[in-house]
Length: 123
Image (cartoon, rainbow, N blue to C red):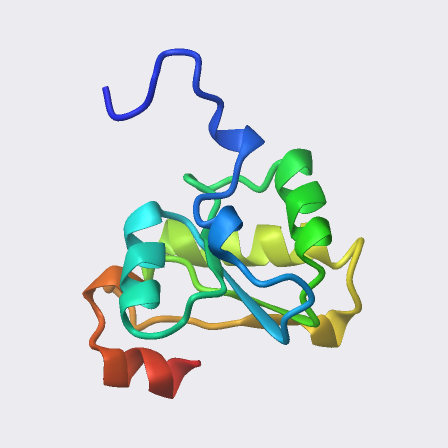
């Protein structure tokens, strides 16, 4: 398996330790490979939920980072779009509406497959 048997995805955010606290932006993705791509393209303040669910622990960790704005960048499929809306709704309980941004990648595309220029245009 990719993770140890006792690993709980809802208990951590991939990339959390690399993020700057109180930064202007925090990009939240579904998967670790998206975070790796974003880091390669210069977007170091990004984390992955490691799935399609934002847990209460994820919310707590984002709170510890204290970003001014949270940018949701999920996959460009129907599940990713649903995840974006569900996560935005959950985050809106803790953050003002204008602090949550939805960044929709083209339909059928994953953020990890976009070029650096495409990512910059979207963000």
